[in-house]
Image 1 (spheres, protein in one colour):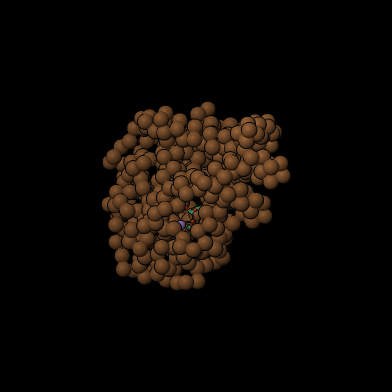
Image 2 (tube, helix red, strand yellow):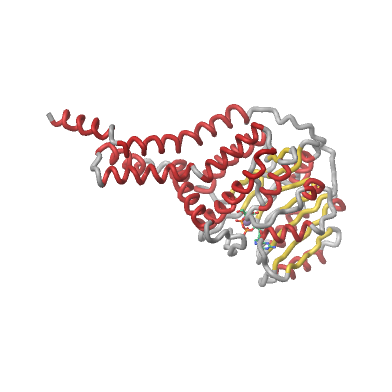
Length: 383
Ligand code: GDD
Ligand code: MN
């Protein structure tokens, strides 16, 4: 008797339009990225690069390091570039400092006095106008054929990093190269997120190119950067947009899995850091859509999918959850409450939790972009 009543209730719930709508949204929300990930991993990742490299190519390289209050890191950063196994007379470092008040420029001057065999130039901007502006300023001083940008808090663990970068750039068809990222000493949340994204970046690169670059290491052929007008302003991640402008000229923008960079993770305010980065990524993808018509059909699909994941997909999840909540509370739908409970019960599974949290970051980031684009951001303590 009771069983048939429950079955009857559940059956009635199943025809509830709110529930049906919610389930459709949630299935699309999880289904598309899973399908994309699966496709990228099985179809693109095993593909050959189709890139002809010259391991002996040794162009003159200019490394730009933008700094704002990096006194705690800048010497280690310069040591790190100095320790690269690359002909020293072919490396030039430009530190572009924007009105730091913690003694960063003095540290750069001291370091360069102690290393007369290394060419370090300090450019000082009198006013802080953000990282993109600093890169733009730095670019006007570049003498090398290859321009590499790198954050002060990023570590190139492998002394062959520069060699590896120019190796990929030795191919005529490649215009820009970035890295995969691993969190320095920090496991957990950031690591799970990175593992998923690193696979996508490399798989997309093997297919043709990836639309997302990293400030921890992004390298460009100078002549192409010149053609696209240098680093763009008005975005948080100028390196990614510059790469996408170069891709619009027909050159590949790739992240090889042989270039790995460690990055420091903020010890506090991690959530705001992630939201700010999501804001930059969203802004970048919106701007990249303008170049869509210049891309080949496979790269068009990649850009459209990434734009969908960062701009639309998270809203499906939020809307689905709200509909389920409404059906549970207002319509007393048992089935809806079961699905809601399931969504909560799965939270201890790390990859699911990381995914869900990221959807919330994306939604907040989109809303925040409406009034504050965070092109000049506050400095965070990192370890
Ligand atoms: N000159 C200058 N002027 N440098 C700046 C400024 C500025 O106004 N703001 C930040 N920087 C420097 C920092 O000192 C650091 O070397 C680098 O730019 C990156 O800044 P972080 O504060 O470390 O930010 P992040 O690690 O979250 O930035 C990452 O994400 C951005 C996209 O959201 C990096 O990968 C960036 O390159 C990327 O654009
Ligand atoms: Mn950083």
